Length: 131
Image (cartoon, rainbow, N blue to C red):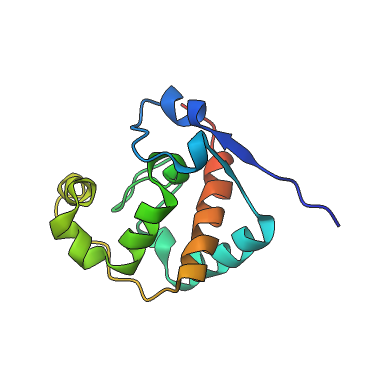
């Protein structure tokens, strides 16, 4: 069975005026559907949807286009050591200010879990139409 491949371009994120700092993979990200499926399970298991949405901001930032706004390296660092990044990374510090002090909890996820979550977030973000 073949799976559709979703390719997200940098122009999609620029169209809504969000910063493209650290754009991943030279401005495009190819979703692996099997990783995205695993990422969906993790997203639900960890309750990420309680604070995050796609195309909307909740207690946490909008995840639509995260793979375009941040490099996969940055996302890995963030999810592995959120607490430290809040004090050492200017992007993380700004996110904390934007969230009025609401902190993302320190996740206990492996690198492969983070990869799966990135693919899921990219897949779901691609489904949201630009405003």
